[in-house]
Image 1: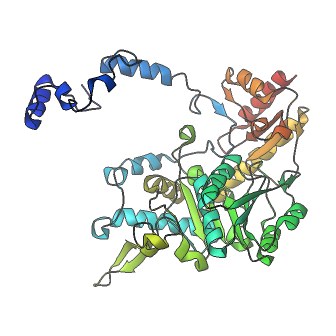
Image 2: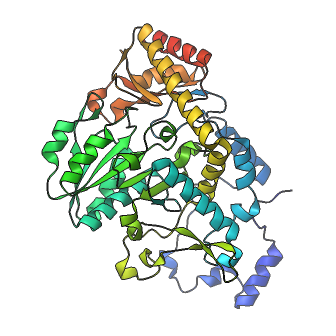
Image 3: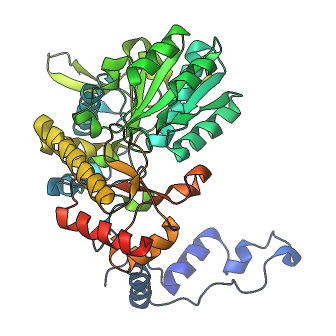
Length: 448
């Protein structure tokens, strides 16, 4: 019998009570007045045997509509991408699976090297000078970038494009509240940041402008122009970028980004019902000492042998706390490893090929929707996602689609009232021509 906990016998209980010098469980709580103790029964089900409990939980889990048994066109920040088989094999090894903080480099060289490789690949993808060992997810990475920008510029206003993921913006707003930082939303036009509106909002109090690349609607922003505008005002450009898209798009570092962040979920990390995922954080060298979280560096020992260590520790919470720029002193090492293994398995050419498949298949879906009489909202350059206008409620359409084994797009009306009856459709490299055709046909049937 497999036990997922340590079973305790009556004899075990009596031996423990005797050890602490009492004869009953009630005696342990004798200091608590009788009148304030809870006397009833908890409003929970009666205990079951482990076998019965596992059967019940399995039945509940089977009600979930997952991407293993259903065809998914749902993205909006979490995507159904191909995961190389080797990813789970590597991260399931006990030396990685149970690793935590590599404070002792002499016994943590494997973990430290894995983190160093992650940092290196992220820096190369983003075109930035260096990257940290990972953050919790894309949302917290963006929020930390905002706090870094405010601290570095000593300004109290951050402009966030209206085309940034709305949940990311919520996280930024929550972080900013505690620091008394003003968050201003930049309007969008034709699915991208309104450049003219941005020019009118940027001033000498602007710490940073935040944009997403590609943005929440799948559209590709003009990063270079946005960067020029904020840099003219001595502010920083923060870009939240999909790292897979950077296989084909010009890296933010080449377009003037000061900080590039995002989520590495697209590389070997399952959707996981929304998490846990793995944020990344990359900067120019001038901001190196203000990066939140951990940095792993390469060095040599006294015999000249290559080794890896945690470096620039003074910026972290656990050393010189009064000078800390963030309260983050952790990372997502296991999931960063998953992303590293996936990126290594793909290689430079493989990442480009996967990214191109996303572009080609999304373009095919766009043309198929238009041929079926749907209106595609935005016509600019896009990656992975398109916005499709419907005649009926997207939520109602999705209820019908799920009965056909199809997970539909994200209902944009939930977060953008002006986009009621608009679906955000994600098409990844896993979707086949037949699946896309069937999806468009079913959408047409429910939308009639």
